[in-house]
Length: 283
Image 1 (cartoon, rainbow, N blue to C red):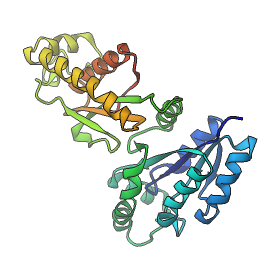
Image 2: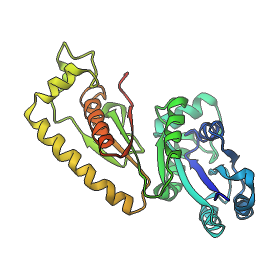
Image 3: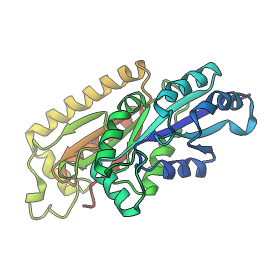
């Protein structure tokens, strides 16, 4: 009989937990939202024996009064019953969370002023976020992009297999909250100030040719890619299953896109499981 596997979906209020659970449901998972933590031990036992609960997504958040104390109990219960589990933490920047609550006029679970509640919740959940297997920044994700990221996470079949996400971003649009490694490409000349390249992106050949003409880039690319390849086995050895590499430039359209695409291609050629995403390329 196949062993059960559960994804614990948690994170900041307003970061998209309900949407994430809907994505899991579309992917064939049995989803339970905000189960009282006191019921988790018995639920874990059901996961071990039921044929219908082999793949489950469990939504937990701070609405549950004993959430913080019960989160550790949930881990213990799943381990006791031999249920494989991974935690996905959904996050978004403070401004986005405040805007979402303001637009929907929903009350924050912690009450109080929304901005104050978001700051307090972030502090309360810092420990949970630190232990998460995957952090997803939903600040600028569409529902389709969120489903794509979750689908990629589900492709993991072995603990030794790492899923690498390479993304480009623009610093003026904010740092991605889910990045494990960040590289700044702003040491290169900006194609945005070259008239014939301004409206193009780092995926276009003229932009790539322009950047490759800079002597510093060849040495940098060789050294940086070699460093990433050396780091991946070390992360795998420490039990990390997901790695998000974020590469930034000023606007997120030229230099970071070029480098993220080149890195994703190189890692794919090395036999690694890689997805590529350009967060700010259309801005």
